[in-house]
Length: 124
Image (cartoon, rainbow, N blue to C red; front, side, top):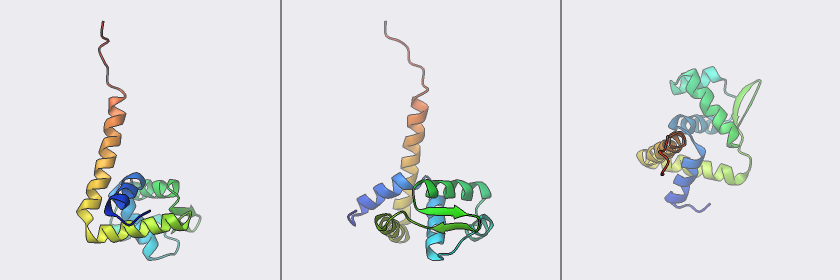
C-alpha cells in the first residue's frame, strides 16, 4: 500500500465498520497484551455491545485475535500491520477525515442493503 491519504482512507473504509473498531485496534496496538472486554469497555468508555462488535470485525479483518486471556493485536501479516499503522497516523492528524470515510462506507453499505429490498413496479 502506498502512503497516500486516499489509499489509507480506502483501507480504513474497507476494514473498520465503525470508529469504535478503529479506537479498539489503536488501544490493542498501543498496549500489546491480552485485553479483556471489560478493560476495553472501561478504557474506551464504550458499551459491551460496541466493543464486542468491534472485536468481531477486527478478528474477521485479520487484525486481532481473541482467546481465553482476551483480545490482542495480531495482524495476519506485515502489510496489514503497516496499513493499520498508517491509518492510526492519519486518524491522529486528520480525525474528521477518517471518521467521514468510515461513516460514508457504512452508509453506502446500509443503502445498498436497503435498496435490495425496495419493491419495484414492473414495467408493462
